[in-house]
Image 1 (cartoon, rainbow, N blue to C red):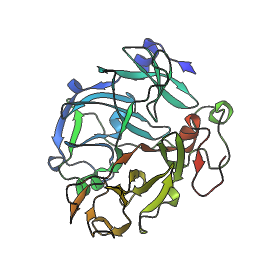
Image 2: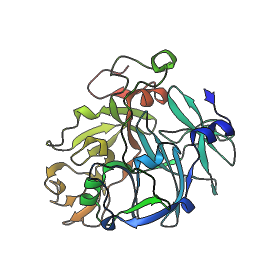
Image 3: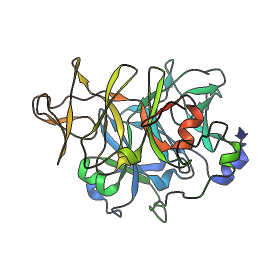
Length: 312
């Protein structure tokens, strides 16, 4: 793993964002280009979004949202956007990028100096090795999708606005990824986007190309958990949820305004919230999941199974 010192981090601009660098705006009050990519953290008190462009260099944001500490990690090469509860043993940890491994950024916490996996929040080195942060729902949406799906969302922008809020996805091959990546296989192209899901030690991923926005939501069973993958018009917004409610698995079909369960007729949005019908106000349980490129997922999950194939 390539470790970067403070001078190298400063030179690259890889310093974490914090609350005092942001001002939060109601999304209704903003006029950003429709295709502006956003990272959207969904919480009990609402939803908060950051433009992808703001995370290109910091990679990490240490924030407090609705009174709750949250750490957001993002890596443009591997297109990971993930959120975690940073409180461990009653202490809030503050994070920054510390290095690169297999083309994926690695985090370190300020308090213990442990190193952490960007994609699933597991400590991989140091005093807290083996500890895993609780993963929080994080979706990748354009500003147009966000305005339509979550009109009450708050958007964090710099106090001094950047020159541009556009983000061009990285299309080049990260340096020596094929040569340096110990786990990379040819099951998928190295840069194929997938939704990775981790449940009770079981790891599985779904190529986004298999998710059809015109079809019914994908139902599956992983480690005994009945799950459903929800996403809007763009599979990049996909996340996994338990489809059990009060012990009963729900069956979902596509609906013009979200998805509907055929058990009760309740209408649900793509955040797993019931918005109309008998279950209105209920929430499906979010399952640890995030969209990323194949090489980033398999770097930390070499024993993963892959939808549509035999185990690697």
